[in-house]
Length: 149
Image (cartoon, rainbow, N blue to C red; front, side, top):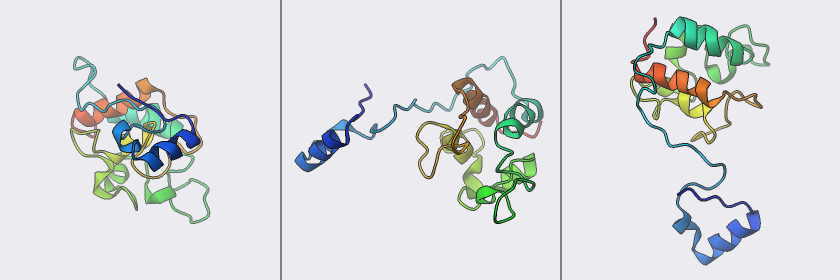
């Protein structure tokens, strides 16, 4: 069972009494457990059609392409999502872990789209965030080997 602390006062009280640790790590927004399994083994996810054109170009291009208007003149975080090779190259903070073949739970790309990323802000910054079904497409692509297809 997931528990959340809804009040900062409650969190301070629990922390001061030593009870905060009993709640476990699920503080803040409720998060779904990551499962590195293909949600629909009958359907093969295409990088070009489903991931790049279907999601990344529409949802992430405003910040993560060389053409994105930003003050430093490169993709935000150094992560260029305009193609397969640049995605796989990673960014400044994501490095080689941007996509871990077969494991969306360890892939920064998948983590940053979820409700509670392990570092930094949820993406796309400021929303609108990807729906659960859209996040699942990326997770399934990663589970299927993150191929350039």
